Image 1 (cartoon, rainbow, N blue to C red):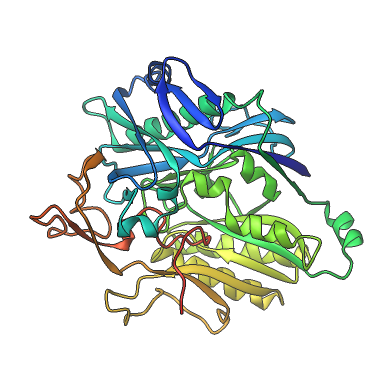
Image 2: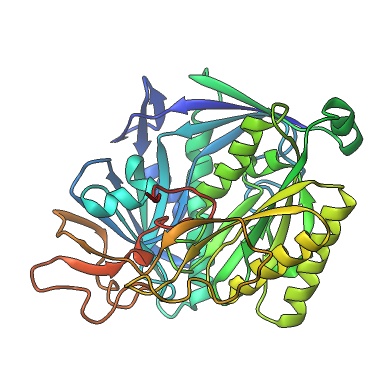
Length: 426
């Protein structure tokens, strides 16, 4: 399967009377995008704002971050099974608006939504502070259930992203990158001497607003399965998560998954990137055993030499992570796992809820319990009302001087477990 991704660089966003892209500037007709959001009767009102890198601006509580894209050639459309009809994507040609994102925000859905600071020390922990962000702040109708509100805001963000992506359909990309994988036998013949490597991506699927969707299907309703890695670039996986902000994968991360991109960089050079294996993170032991069994079985059937396994979330999913690692290693397939840590504010607690000697090659996204003081910002998009109850906050988080003391767990993307972040070690 072959996909060309054309990059349209967006250097600025401005509100205007007409939506268009000119000379690297995205002009947004506020009334047009308002009408798109209010198509859903569960949303009573919406406000739009623009947050740019370096500004004294805080966005909170953040629901999702989405990169606008448009399918210009090939089967299907972006966000298949969610916005576009169900069709196999991942081939042809797609354009992406780089350097910007749609950020959905609004009244909190659960206890676990996040913060994006566009400047200051908090900005150093989130990749989304480097983007020009069109922020969509939704107001739900009265009496709406949390899961209904989550769905309404999620779909509104996708509709806005698709609308903006369409503005690029007739443009010429600033650059184009090509990604190609091969059938099992074809790949083995083409790269006979290269190790066969796959990416096992664990998807958050614990329910109760801890959800991820694959072609529109809730991941907890699926068994482990195989996908071509180019499919994620067309939005085949989207976020419905209200988990801890630091290590959830917003839709933007799925579209730009760095594990996928890094493996493609080595594809045909040092490795044969065979496929992407999707598996879920359920709450019952039997479901965990079933999914990890299937994942290990596929690794053996595909005759893989090695896999990279990325986790999403922490705590309960640590068990899924170690089960996958143990069983895949037992099949003779070398395994590297990517996780993050909840090692306490002093860093001395047990980092994961589960462990095993087979997990001897580990990449960490950092310690989510690390404490940070965020300065008072000149402007808040959304509300700071919930910083005391989001994951990583506490009743003392909001200080009298306007600063906020939280664990980096509260910062969107701070310890991302695909490596989509900035923390490192010395």
